Length: 376
Image (tube, rainbow, N blue to C red):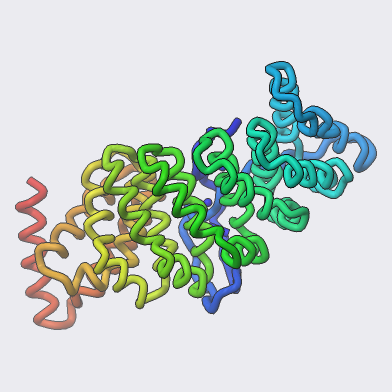
């Protein structure tokens, strides 16, 4: 799937798409999902003139600087420059490079030199940049052994942030649209590795954000994946992350998206997440970051999925939820307004605010009066 220099914004906005029968699980998606479910990836650039594939492949470089294992400053600068050329290339050029002997040699060398810190960091960044060029490149990176390479690097250097961060980012990108990559991550200890990294680096906002991104892309289109991540403790780890970084809008929005994807269209997990405190996390995120559109959008989508639990919990919780989405609807950002309106409709429907029934009319009047009081 759902939505990554190593430090651009974690989730970028891209065109809204329909996802149908994506992933390995039992869910067949027929509705339009929010923009932010799209993974971060670099938009493909217009291919240049000239014969294919020679000129474009040359524009990417031959990976000689990345393949060099020397850890000198000059070698690292050369590798960084080559990665920049790769980042600026178009999708076809990157796909051609991934089919070359140089790419296979790089993956083989990563396997042969597991303890070379700088080389592993550079190799994981290569996987990240290549996979960020779209679905085709994600599949090709996975076919080369990119998932296992990133998992090995993250495992061998669990305490080394300069390796762990690009390794997790690479996993997030490879899991975005590729069902085979998702299955490979889930078939081994990939989820446990991600959750362990988030726990071991609990004070690091960036590891929390990237870890949430991996979980989000693994669960967004598969009920089977949702159940597996939840059973392994994914919801608990995300909840601890959000509670540990209440002032970080990046962690809050990433956590809301991870929880949303973990329970979207899954009533069983919606109940489980609500029981685990996801409603409070969503409302706290909305209340603490009213000026951050990304948090407001993600929080409202999560409220929408948990609407049944909010409406059945207590009148006061319902009032708080409606108040939060009502304030979000005042946003001038269309994406936030859309998410908030959807959350408000879901809450109203779940609470039985139907104009045709006397009970519904009474409750609407009570809610309107209460909202008026708390919004003053």
